[in-house]
Every structure is written in structure tokens, then in C-alpha cells.
Image 1 (cartoon, rainbow over the protein chains, first blue to last red):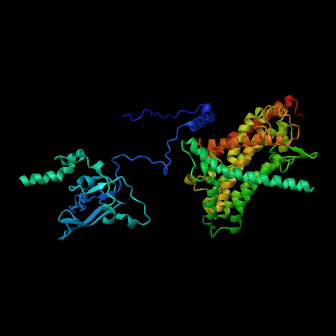
Image 2: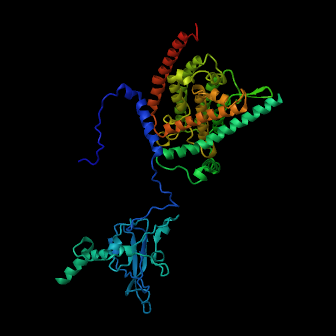
Image 3: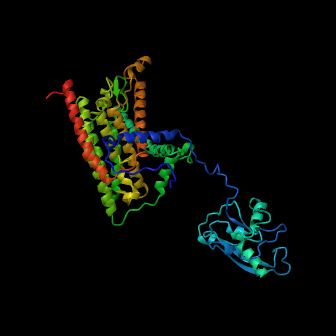
Length: 199
Length: 351
């Protein structure tokens, strides 16, 4: 198999006199470096100029609220199960009377933590979530001085009502349809459940 | 007498300031040039085009923590970088920066001291630089520093020999004078010495690279391969002095090469130009133009040093020694022999 056309056959042949002199090779090399003076520079001057992210860039997570402002997460644990880095932990709580505006389902996440040092930003949590609650955004996880600071709790993950985060690029109808196709790996649990019900 | 002292002091301070300034801005130009050669931009944050970068670097060096190892010989430890930088600057006194200008019937040369044994003084002073390295490595009381110091000083001594012999050939071509000023002035008539001494120039150039510890001979400072070198234990400004001295060395050896082999302040059709401008012999404008010519040549040489650094990979130690003793030394002897024969038949020397 050939991956590139730059293959060179190694040989042990003695160097000729001109090769031993090194000078032709050195002069040649110097002209190569010199030619680079006039080449285009691909540098992006970072703070002033920013590289555009791909629309599907996977950055820091967000726990979405629904239109009324209630948390969508029902603490089912699918994301934690799907997470290959085991970065997600949660603890569920039961919704009390009068909290209907806060949580959408009867069960909710009392504690929800993502360890940003473990997270590999694969996006499987997003795919696993049956409630459309967790999404990856285009934001970068901030740098910190202490390792503890990287364990993001609900205070950092749940979106603020006044600063809602747009995840429509991840919620396209195609994506939603893809999530419901039975027989696909990521839908296995779902289909298994359906099959069990039949027997 | 007083006039003489004042004039010499001014020249002294000027040469000192120019050496330091050029050394400081070489660090900037090195980074910028390296960037350009590697399709990057180089420093661009501190000031326009990163021009304040040397100041920032200097400030950083000043405020870093200064460490003197407990087990070191403290006096020598502090002395070494100073010795290194002093010898680096001292070689600069010889350089005749331009034609002398006349004022009130007196000639004022643009040179600190026209020593009549200039070439020997130059070789002597540059070899004292080895002491800086050796003392630095030894006084650190660190095996790796000592090994690094021995490595670097062995390198410098090996290359000094070929350098000296190629200079002897140059002196023969220059008619037996040892004065830097005369060697440069002599190239006013006829060609620059490089025309008669191409091989000698090449040897001198390679040796100058090795003497200044520049790539591809920068074994003195290859952290990744050979555990730093003589300056492993140095930090902050003392390390800065070592690195700074390297740049001063580079500046001085560029100036020496431009003077010895490329005619210094002379350039083709200089006299035609001066006549066309209606300038009298001894005018200060001629001095200024000459200074400009010399300075341009020096800067070009500095750039070539950097160009080489970012092109050729570092030599291995045995390759370095092989090149020095088995190639350059015989070559320089050959060059000397050829020069003697040619000059004998030209009638410039007799036995």
C-alpha cells in the first residue's frame, strides 16, 4: 500500500565527492529557505482575527430549559451511561408541589456535574439524551488555576433564562429524525425496550 | 591632547553603544527573520513590528530569579559572564568604521585604536572568550556544565587554528601588515581581498560561525540533546549576558569579515561617486558614506549568519571535530601554500 508518492528507497551507497563537500547541498538548502521569505503566511493574528468554528463544533455543555423556563433534564442517566470518559455524575430528586415551573418532569437532577478535565467532547451525551436537555455549544471551557474548578455543577451548566444559548444548529429536523431511527447503535436501548414489551 | 581624549572617549562610547544596540536588535531581527523564513510573522506584539521586543526581553531577564548554586565558586561564577561579554566587546575597538575625516588640519579616524598588531590582538582577545566559558562551566560545580564547557572550549580552540592560518594567508595578500586599518584601507585600490582569497574567506567564515557558537556549530547551547552546556546553572541576567555576548560576538565577527575580506568602508566606484558629489578628501560626508557602506555589509553578514542558522541542522560533536581538524586545518594550510606560491611569482614576497 502506498499512502504518499514521496517514498524514497534507502541505500547505503558511498557519497560521491560533491556530496561529501556538502556545499552544493547547503547552498541548495539556503535557497530553499530564502524562497520562503516571499511565501504567503498562513498565520491568523489571534486576538484581532479569529478562525471561524465549524458549525458542528463541540464545546462546553449546556443544560437546556424549555420554552417556559423549566429544566428539561429528567435525570434518567442516559448521558452518564453513554459517556465514554465517565465524566458525568448526577443525583436525582423528586419534584415537590409548586415546582412545576422549575422542572418539567417529576424526577429532576438535584445535582448534575460534568468533569471538564475528563470530558472528551465526543457528543455522545447529546445523542443519548431522550429529553433534548443536554447540548454541546460553541463555547470554550474557561481555563482555571485549580483542578476543582473544572467540575462544572448545575450553576455553570444550566442555561440562564436571560442568556439563552442557541443550539438550533444541533437540533435540525435531520438530527432529530436520525435520533429516532430504530436499529442504529445509539438507539439500541430504545429498540430493545420496545422488543421486550412485545414478548 | 585634551581634544584627543575627548574624541577617543566619544568614539569609545559610540562603538560600545552601537555594539550593544546591534546585539539587542539582532535578537529581534533573529526572531523576525526566523519567522519570515518559516512562513510565520515573528514578534509582532511589543510595539510596531515587535520593535520593543528586546526591551521586553531585557526586562524579563532582569526580573527573573537569580540563582547562584550553593556549592559553586561564587566569585568565579559571577565573573564568568562578565569576562565573556567584556572580551566580546573588546574586539570591537579595532574596527575602522570609516575613512578618517579632517578637522582643523587634524585627522580623526573612525576607530578606537589602530593597533599595529591588530590581527594578533583580535585572535588573542577572541581566545580569552574561552576563559569565560571554561570558568563559567567549572565554577558551577556541575558535571554537565563542566562537560559542556570543555565541549565548547575544545570547539573554539580547534577552530581558532584554521582561522589563524587563513588569516596568515590574508596578511600575505595584504602585504604583510597586521593593522586592521591598513588592511581595510589597502582594499581601496584594486579588489577586495575575497577575490584573492575565496577559499581563505570560506574557511574564515566557517570558523567564525564556530567561534561565535552559532548554528550549525551551536553545541554550546543545545538543551535538548546535550543538557544545555556551560551555562546550565545560570539564570536571569547572568544567562542573559552569556546570550547577549553571543550576539555581540556575531556583530564583531561580521564586521571583521566585512573589513578583512569585503573591503570594509570601500565599495566599487567609491571615488567616482565622491568626485561626482564634489567631495574633498577628508570630508566628514565621505566618512559617513563609508560608515554606511561598512555597516550595511556588517548587517548583511549578520543576516547571513541567521539565514544559515535556520537552514542547516546542528553538527554532531565528532562531525564538528572532524570538520575542524581533518578538513579545515589541511584546507587552510593548502590555501596558505597556494597563496605563498602565487605571491612569490607575483613578486610580492621574496626569500
